[in-house]
Length: 329
Image (cartoon, rainbow, N blue to C red; front, side):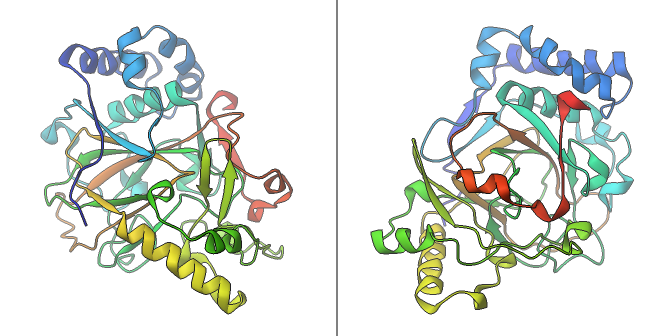
């Protein structure tokens, strides 16, 4: 797997200073990165950013389906120790929550989930004791299987942003674009059929208890810009599908593995992923739980009117989960 050949957009010193100063102003005025009033102010503050910064923070625009924004510099000492669980983060790294929200708001509308991390618009991804082998961001000792974010839900994000706070061990995030995969026409046709459902992952305990019957969804579908994808093999009951479909699904996984890249994020890097094109995962590592472990902040963005998903998704129940939008908070 190639290491960090992902496209990089560099923020110069002036642009990075403008972005962090704007975030600091918002945080100082509202007092908390989780303030509904701060969220409501994001569009106004984004409109005041320079044209050069706004251009650097445009959405993904290549078939790679991702890029790394580089040039921000969090202070490792000021951050304090890596928390042992998302619920104990408190205000640690709050400035970077706001930075990430500004970047998100320039690209679309930040969203959150009522059933995940208390409805926060910025999630903290840290290894947590007792969760080492789960297929969630709190895991460590197992490969986090490549997937599209929140694939079980029709209101899932169009863009996923991962901001690195700490990564002393160079632990890689993996990513692969379906538009770089070499797929046979017959396999694409099979995977456009709604054959198997995608179930909620372990981060959504309420959704896993939903009483509604899971409905099959297509894995691949066409859009005006090309092929798009909805994929989470760890939560797809493949035994419900016919053999030909399972084989096609397996070949898709092999192709995604072939074109996968490993991105080792530096502190301050923001990995921006097109969630309609790209699966992402993480290599296994040994967590120390000593305050120096890998720490990412995650934001999800919806781009209204984006024609990348089939109309039939509007009829899905979403396992009872509601997406919250920043402007309505």
